[in-house]
Image (cartoon, rainbow, N blue to C red; front, side):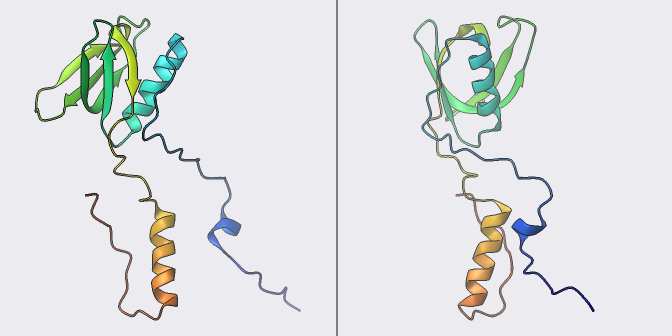
Length: 139
């Protein structure tokens, strides 16, 4: 006699819990400690929107972080970004950063695989035909 078939879902089949994606758009992290600055800049590197960096001299740079290099000290660690409306690439030492804000729209928010699958099943349940999982424009 066979076992009754269970209702299999993606959640039921998941072996390891997925990484939680926290929405950080609009976040202004506390940068009191070196570890907080390093953690915030790691999140900024993974962020798919612009950030605003306020330097210790009071100037501000808004742009997209495309690289970071962690050194032994804040002076030898740098974040690299492309400022808004410029193709110029800047390198900023972590030690020069006074504040960081996630000011740009997160273009990857809500674009997960789970969101695609949910849309597919919603369309199928609504009776649509010739549906497929197509990537959406990020704009």
